[in-house]
Image 1: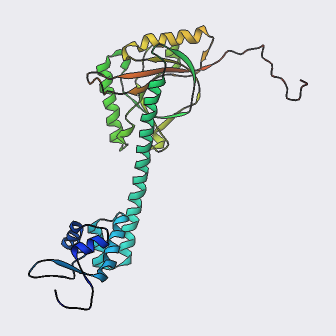
Image 2: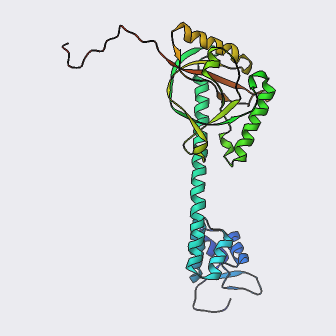
Length: 296
């Protein structure tokens, strides 16, 4: 090493004091963004000037901002603030998009956890219950055929069409779960099973809100089932329950896949269904609310 008043650092020392690795410094050298101050001709050891810490700090900072080595090299070559600003604006857009994608993934994880919990706590198949269900948002597709006239194999193909439809619109595949189907109110009341509309539930971060529909909140008569093949019989029991209790069906029937975990049986689609219809209750003429200012 040549004698000098400046402080030189071996590549190992340079890596240690800057909390990086020797491999990273070698890569920066190869990319041309941080070359050693000199290399010993006999030993081929790399040595860095202590003042090069400033350049390494800038590289590490730019990497933290999400810039790649190629972009960093472009900035150093052009020595132009406009180049830095242009790259950072592009990185800002990419970061915002990444944040939205992470929100979608976070919500999907939460939905899956909720689905598992709901499955564990749901009543046994055949149970009928009244439930208040919050407002929901869906993305739907018309299949073009009445899937009630076909078997589970055709339903599988329709599900694949729904997935293709999502992907063709550049919509996240992560929404491809917890599917559902509709039956018009009049068809449900007459037990006329005809429908070609299939949907998936989405959330507030769905990228194309203009393509969604709202299912309003309300009281629903619900029945649980664990077999695709028993839906018709279960739907009839649900209708019988509503009529027996004097409930008025006020909207379309929905068959919702609450959970679908094909983990333990790969030969069939394991579905736990919630069949549901919005209902209104009979008016009780004997009920008279007491005015707030009445005497006790």
